[in-house]
Amino acid sequence: MKLNHTEAWSECLTIIRNEINDKSFSTWFSPIKAVKLENNVLTIQVPTKMSYEWLEDKYIIQLKKAILAVLGSKGRLEYILPIETPYAKSKKLNKNINPFAIPGIKKVKIDSNLNVNYKFENYIQGDCNKMARSAGVAISKKPGRTPFNPMIIYGGVGLGKTHLAHAIGNEIKRMHPNHNILYTTPEEFTNQIVNSIRNDTMNDLVKSYRNIDTLILDDIQFLGGRSKSLEMLFNIFNEFHQNGKQLIITSDRQPKDLEGMEDRLISRFKWGLVADLQTPEFETRMAIIEDKLKEEDIEFPSAVKEYICYNIKNNIRELEGVCTSIIARATLSDREVNIELAKETIQKFVTFSDKKISIENIKHVVANHFHLDINLLDSKSRKRDIVNARQVSMYLARNFTKQSYGSIGAYFGGKDHSTVMYSIRQVKNQLDVDEIFREKINTLEKEVQFTLEN
Image 1 (cartoon, rainbow, N blue to C red):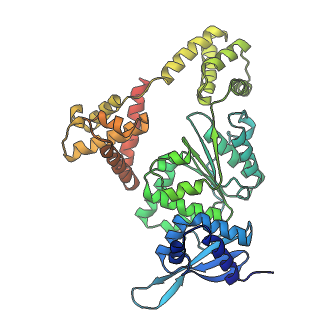
Image 2 (tube, one colour; image 1 turned 180 degrees about the horizontal axis):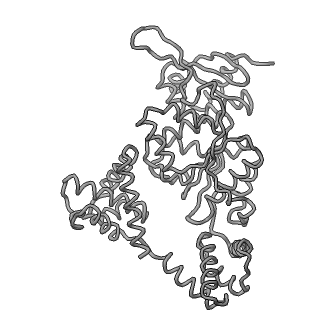
Image 3 (cartoon, rainbow, N blue to C red; image 1 turned 135 degrees about the vertical axis):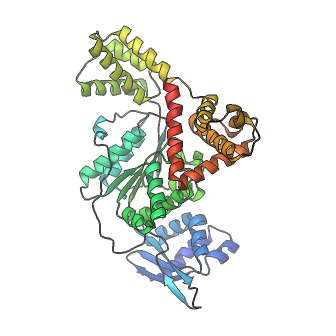
């Protein structure tokens, strides 16, 4: 027998009651009224905006479990929120709580920003990435309609996260030509939000994201602490998940270890698949080399390929870079590709790769940039220019070295970990709203990297 909206919500409440305590149920669920049930979409009316936000933040898992149990896999939930007008005591209904719930937006084809060179065909499968690659292939066939939504791909530098994300996007594009896909980075994402706030065009930005069917967000760890960006991502997530759209995210660490990330987002990341990319084993490294050489239409002796595999173990990007360097040195110097050439190349390559950026190095770069005596960064001075330089130094130290807050503080006159955390948060907050400051940080990051290379 088909349920009406009241019956459906009553069954949902029965399930939810068993999941939470009586006081919480009475406070947050008893005041809710079921409004209608159409096409497996149950609409409920909540008494206040705070109630809606609390439900979404604290009880989204219980709500989802109940809706799926009562309405099936296609079941969805929508909210209606009464809001007070400042000029009247009467209430009007506002159904657009989520800014993405804007009806009637015409679908427009967009530029995907995908790298066409990253495909499944040249993404070598091994034990290190088999699960992630297989899930990516499944997503490509039915984007938004597999259990792998969202898909979180995490792993160390150079293990192929970006390649796999682009490969999924390119395959979706091939199999579903009318599917709108967007690849973006935290920097681009944040810049869009900052510009929309400055130009009062947030509604236009919201509409543009509502037009997307699959969103690929690379290196999400760099969004940590950016409150406006995280709020936007939270709304995007809810819209995508509710409407069967695909979300693919890459990170250098698993969700629970992301710093500056809201708990409500981290909990949602766990709804889909969290897939890690591990260090490639010997056989996979060999296959990657052979694929690279095939692409360059050249062959290396077996001994050379094995030598490379034994000496470059933790980074696919380095593996391919060494091959490219050997080819270049052999071609430009008219030399034979042999163990001796491979050894010379790897020694130089690994020497560069093994260089570490030190906190002292960062302090020198920042002090020079701000025209300050480096010793002032260790002082207790509260002068604005010195505090600013010190905070920027701590922010860069955390990003480049990944040392603990306490360890970083020791390099700045013995500051405690809370001071370091506060300083980094201040820099991140300013990055959210100040374009000139972001450009300054970008310049400093390049200067730090330049000192490493030289």
